[in-house]
Every structure is written in structure tokens, then in C-alpha cells.
Length: 455
Image 1 (tube, rainbow, N blue to C red):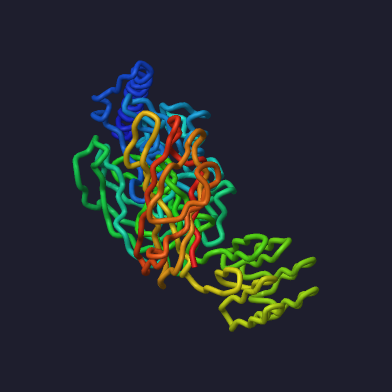
Image 2 (cartoon, one colour):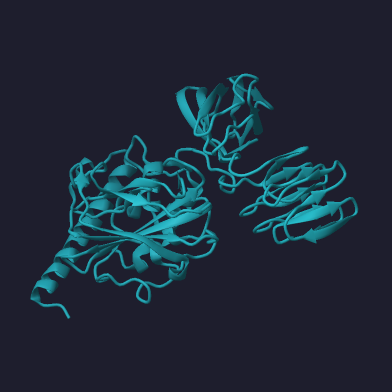
């Protein structure tokens, strides 16, 4: 039960929220006429995670334009704006519940965690959308990184840090049962001033070991001087990354997570949590491993055995005939006709995390009727890559006219660039680049994501 002081704090919060709402409305009106409310940053607001970036923060970053209007390019961000408008993005820092008082599970309903239970003065409900194309920060399982959390208004309190459990799917609504707590920090230090994009609290956060694939980090900031709490959802990938952000400003996303790559053979591709299996004519996805032959499929616990015309499931080792390859307990086996585990290419096997390839697309210069682009190809694995391939779909009206440091498959549409003879090898945690120029009608960014595969 609140005393008089508690009532006063609540009234102040409501008054502050009304002021923010009026400012946000004014900013929206001005942006319509190409103006930006410079003074908007002086409003006393609150905060969300900036590293790894929350959905509202990265959508705001993605949407910023020179006129002050917010026009995100990321499809999830664009859908959120279509549903809730731009006012929530102008107030990206205000995902809050004034009465949470440290409560979470049992108080905030499942499916509304990323919008503070829809208790904010702004409509953040669209940022609960269960989809896998939100902007994403790429991290390394088992490492420690510096978390940063915006301090638009400074408050004493504790940050509770959670991560989704292994196997969570971004295409299902986030539930409390999906989360496990990995840390807390109280009153961490701050850098930069409050009321600015750059100001933030910071602390070193250990990430869980043994994780791979896409995940979500949820942070609840529990004030110690008020019942007001702040909620933040950040989409991440445990793929050997070092904080790279993809999915904004036309940036790339990796295909299915890259800590353990999928499996490709002639005729198809399979991505699994650890491995999948594909052969000519069919595709199989498995949590640990699967086996496919032409005309039939059998899933094995760890690996399987394949022969032409039939399949036998095994417990530990996988065997494939028609080309004759046999793998050990953990490594995958591939010939043209079958695969068991690991990362594979037709005629050979590459196991473990060596397939951790990621590509980032950037427009480095533009002019009327054209632009120059650069793609950075990174190896986040633990072993060198020997060759790589990057694919994307060019924007409507874009025609690549020249390209260097790679080999281009086609000038427009669905394009693929493979390495040149001299830059196919990328050391562990290393990178290389290729560049190009293109004619354009203004659609300089790819349609959808840019993917990278390597061996």
C-alpha cells in the first residue's frame, strides 16, 4: 500500500508521461513537414538496452532519416510502425509500467513481456510480434561483454538479466517459462549525460556457455525509489559474433544461426540445431541429426546409415555408400546422396563451428542514378574458412555494373558472389571485403536478408 510519498511519485510519473506524449505528438506533426524536434531529447524519460540493442532502440536507429521522420527498413520494425505508428519509436526509451514494483511472472501476461504488459503510456504492443526478422545482435556463447542500458533519466535500482532457453523459437510468443535469469546488477556506473542517445549505464555481463542459434535477452530495470519498472527485449544470435548488429539500414542477417551450420548436398539444404540432412529430392530438419535418401527418410538419434535405395538408423556413427564415406561419433558424413551431421558440402565434410560465416552489406557512396556498395565477409568460427559465398536479392531497378574482390553470378535479381582465388581463406575471427558499383533507381538496399555460406 502506497503512502503519501508513493502517491506523489505516481502523480509525477503520470504528469511526466503526459508531457512526453504531447512532445511525441508534436514531433510527429513536425516530422510530417520535414522538421525535427531538436529539444525532444531534453524530456525526462527512462531507458532500454542499447547493447545488445532492444527492439525499440534498433528500430529507432533503423528508421532515422535526415528530415526527422522515422521510416524503418527492417520488415519487423516497419510492421510495428504500421500497427502502432511512429509515436512509440520517438519514445523508444519508455517501455514501462509505473506500478510493476518488481513484479513480473504472474503479473505481466505471457506474450506482452516486450511491451511491459501493455502498461506504457505508448502503444508498444507491436514489439511483442513473434517473428524472426527483428534486428539482431551477434554474440559469442560463454564470453563476457559490456552491456549498455540507456539512462535517459537516472534512477537507482537493479537490472535483472534473462535469456531465453536453448530451443526457444522467435516465431512463438515470448513466455516467462522461456526465460532463465543469468545475472543482476545494482546501480551500475554510467557514461554520458542523461537525456541523450549516447548516455548509458554499463556493466560486464557473462553470457551462458554451450549456446547456439537465435535467442532473446530480456532486462527488467527495477527502480528502488519507485514502483516504476522498465522492460527491454533484445534479439540476439549466439553465433560467434562480437556485437555486430544486422537487420537495420539494409544490413544482413545470417541464415539460421551460424554456430553450427546447416547441411547442403546436391538438391537441397537442411538447417538443424546441430545438423540436418539433405539429399537429391528431399530435405530433412533434425534437432540432432537426420538421414535422407532418395525416396525415403529416417531420423537417427545421433547419426544414421544410408545406402542407395534404403535407410537404416544408427546410434553413434553414420555411414553413407554411393561414394563411400564413413564418419566418426560426432563428425558428419556426406556424399552425393546422403548426410548425417555437421556442416557439409557435396563430396566432403566440414564439422563443428568452422561454417560460422556472416556478411554485412553497406552503401559506402551514392549519387543520382547509382551507388557503391561494400560487403564484409566475417568468419566467427574457430577454424579458417577456405572458400565463401554471399547471396542476396538486389533492390528493384538495381543493376550491378562492376565488382572487385569476388566473382559475380548475375548483375541483378538473385545474385551470388563467391571468393576470388586470392581471398577465399579467412582466418578464425578474421574478415575480408568485396565491393561493387551499381546503377539504381534509388532502391540501394537488398530485398530481404543477405546470407553467407562457407566451407
